[in-house]
Image (cartoon, rainbow, N blue to C red):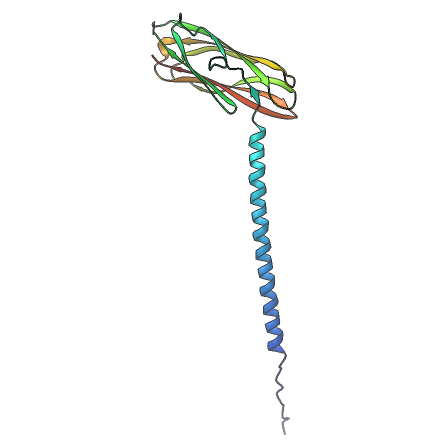
Length: 202
């Protein structure tokens, strides 16, 4: 005769299964919350770091203003074919705008720009240099452009920025501009100031 087997009901399995499900749900919740907090922290720290990086690139230069002008120019004025219109200083950018008064064909004007740069930061400025940053001159009106800056400016002292260029008035048929970057090493980081000369047609 075959043996009779008596099935035993396992009453503990549903309890264990429910416990495992609860533990898994709790773990998932904690993991999701932790990842969300970490992601938020990462984004915040990233934004702060980006802002600091951008701020560190700005060179703190104080410019002397005389009757609304921050520079002096030769070749621009009452007895020349170019007239000064405005100086606009915004943060670490200065734009000087001049306009052609008369167009005498191939008449070429030489311009020399001088500007005092005051160290308004907290450190000495070293390794000063200039570079052509941006140029919009579709007709080739600007030539012989050169610029220089004091090699260093001590804390609370001043230096000189000088730029020379030639402008062919006959080729100024649309707004023309030239931007030069001025950079110094400040506390181990290179920082920048930008100077733009904009020439408008008659």
